[in-house]
Image 1: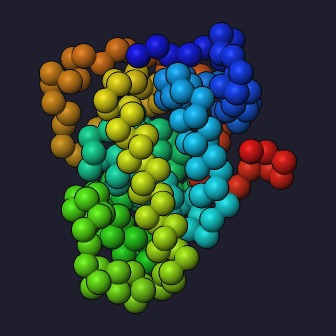
Image 2 (image 1 turned 90 degrees about the horizontal axis):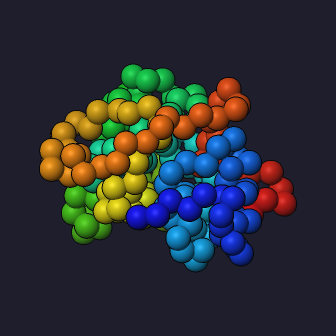
Amino acid sequence: MTLIDPQDATGEAKSLLSEITAAFGATPAMFKAVANSSAALKMMWAGFGALGGGRLGAKLGEQIAVLVADRNGCEYCLAAHTALGRKAGVSAEHMSHAQAGHSADPRTDAALGFAAKLVENRAHVTDSDVETLRKAGFDDEEIVELVAHVALNLFTNYLNVALSVPIDFPKVALRKPTDPKRAAGRRPAAPLRCPREELPVLFHPRPEGKR
């Protein structure tokens, strides 16, 4: 899969990559891969922005992301969202617990448990599963938003795994190792070097006027 360099991009993909690069201080490989389709890039970037303005917050969003990535064996998303979760203020220990599907916080634990069932059961959850979320304090808006977080992460997981996008964030070990044959086929990548001291939080409202 060709990784589109922002300098070589054209049309809408070029403007979107310019915005992404400005946010990160560099262009992560995932966005370069998605830039092969302007429509997909626009959808993904808009999704990050929309959920960033939602009610679940950056910390929970990133914890959901590492859980989903681990369940799908997506090393790229696990690495990226672990870094972004740390930037959002979640401790390394709590990110590790989230990856395993647990949290000492009852509300976060309920969200992670529901997200895990969504992924593992292909959305075939029960009324009881939804009721458990309600008892943990989630209303209808937040439940729908949680499903949206999982769905967006499924897209990025599938893309990175299927197309073997090279990892350019500090690697984090999956709880279940990747198939050695697949790992052997992954291209190496240089670590993402951002001029800024901190990575941006994807699930965070962008300044007014941004897409």
